[in-house]
Length: 479
Image 1: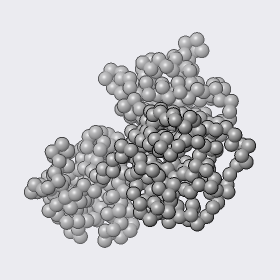
Image 2: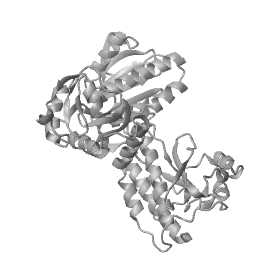
Image 3: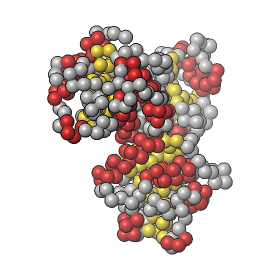
Image 4: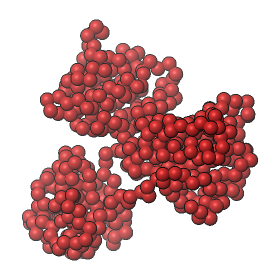
C-alpha cells in the first residue's frame, strides 16, 4: 500500500492530467474524486476546484448516513487482480458525469467531471473517468516508493482512446463480440480525411463503415470490384471520392479496410458514420452522435449554439409562455441558420410592449415570424450588414439596423464592431437582448451592456494537492 505522500503525488498527477485532457476535449473542465482506500477507512474528498460544491447533502446521505457503499462489495476472490477495477453505479448527479469502481488497492473511488450542456454524448467522458480509476488503482498497487507522471501524460492525450473505448463497448453490446471492424484505423481515417483539402475545399459528405457481411447483403447504388477498391487509409483518394456524395443522401460505404462503393437508399442498421461538414463533422454509431471532430482532433461539443441564457430571459419576461416558447424557437432557427451557412449576423430581441425606434430599413408590414416562409425570409435578410429587429409580438420590424451608443466599460477591441456596438446599445436601452453571431461560429448574448454568455474563468488548478479531507470536514467547508 502506498504511503500518504506517495498517494497524494499519484492523485495530483492523475487529477491534473484528467482535468487538462477533458478541458481540451469538452471545454474548460474540472475533476474531483471521492474515495476510501480500505473497507474501514473514512471517505475522503479531493476537490481542488470546487466542482462538487452544492451536492453536500447528497454526499452526506450516500456516505455518512448510510453504509450501503461499504457493503456492496464483490467476493474478495473476484478482486484478486491488484490493478483490476470493478465498476459501481453512477451517482446520476445533476450537472456531473461520474464513474466509480472498487479494487484491492482502492476499496471505493468515484471520479467526477462536469457535464457541459453542448456535449454530443457523455459516453467517451465516462470511459475517460473509468481509465482514471484504473490508473489510480494501478499506481497505488505498485511499489510504495515509486510514483511517476505517466498517468497524467496518458490522461492528457486520451481523447481518441476514450472515443474508441466507448464505440467498442457499444459495438460489443449491440453487435456482438465477433465484429471484424478495427476501430483505431477507422478513427485515424476520419481524422485524416477531415484534414485533407481538395481544390481548396474541406470535406463534405458522409462515410459509413459496416460489417463486410452486412454490406454484402445491402444493395448499393455502385459497388467497386474487389480488386480495385480504394484503401480507407489512403486519405487523399477517399477525399476525392467524397465529392460524389456531396449535397446528397448518398454516402461512401466501407468495410473498415476498403471503400466498397456508394450507398443506395438503405444502410445497414449497425454502422459507424462520419458526417463531414466542411471543417468539422460528427462521428456517429448506429445513427447516434458520439462526438464531433475538427482541427484533427475529436471533441465533445455539438457545434450548436447554447442559447440557454436567451431561454431563461424569455421565461422570466412578461411574455405569455406560448409566446416565449415561439420567440425562442425563432431565435434558435436564425442563429443555427447563420452558423450552418457561415455568415455573421446580429439579432435585436425587443421585449418592450411597443418596439423602440432603431435606425435601419423599416418594413411597411412587419413579417410574422410564426409563418415558415416569413421566418425563412428573415434568415435571408440577416445576411445583410446590420441587425434584425425582432419584437415581442414575434414580428420582424426592421433589418440592416444600426446599433449605436456611448462607449462603456467592458468593451473588447478584439471582438469587433458587432459585439461592441451591441454592448453600447443594450447599455442604453432596457428590455433589449442582442444575440451576436460571428462568421467563425462563436456567438454572444448581451443584455444591459453585459455579455451574458461569457464563460467565467475556472479557478486555476493548484500546483499541488493538499491531503484529501475527510467527508465531514469537507461538508463543514474545509479548504
